Picture 1 (cartoon, rainbow, N blue to C red):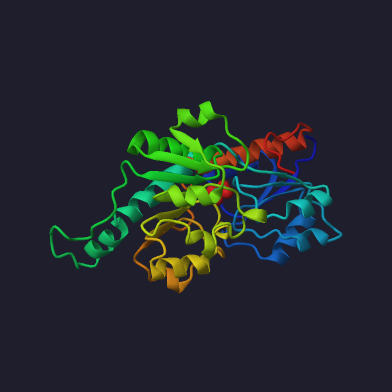
Picture 2: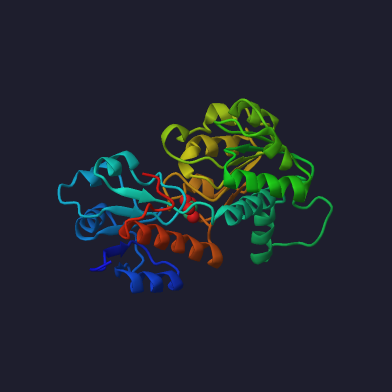
Length: 324
Ligand code: DGY
């Protein structure tokens, strides 16, 4: 590299990664860590050779209509990229990369935490203890649902879906069924104690816990709607660590309010960071602020993946995690 490429990082990243970026590039950081609005993002696309966005940045088609775009690559911090209009970026010749692989275990761990927390009513229990309302042990207190031995239904059997299957099958003796658009090798599935079913509906009907691990956006928007929620068992739970828009949130609130399903564990929401009041007041739902990949190890590894992708691009090599 002769002149260092000008890059903009849209949010604060782990210190170790920011340090490498500052050494390698002419880097600008968002010291305030406040999400950038559309006008600021357009300005960034005009002024920098690379923009390094993340889940909280909305890069819709209209941003790519600007005639003065300078950016050649979007090095996304995150595996999901449904916040970027990939077709519009591609049409402007902008390369887009993501960070697969490094957040698999931590995201599956959060899905597992949600599953256990909602089934065993641990959130309710914690609130009770903290508020000084706990009256002591009694046989009928906060009775939850047993997890061990139940059936897990996975929608989307990619890396994270498989990691969830592994946890549930080997850790909790669960029977695992899944839906995946493409056919998964039977031997691979059975090594994880899992069995592929033909349709989403079959999985919903069979499962005591449904865990979503498919990408957001496109055809997956509102994949779980009122009709499909009604196909779940009334005693079943829905776990979402994928993307908020995979679930019709209003339909889910109604299903939780009226007992169509027993409960839900959610790490993602339709319009983050807004979480509807009707959801927040329910006791049969566990709510987390999009923590799937939030460990020191994983967030650093994600950042280093972006470094590798952007470095490769500016050195004229194919970025390892190119999605567009
Ligand atoms: C991702 O990577 O897409 C997550 O949602 C944020 O870690």
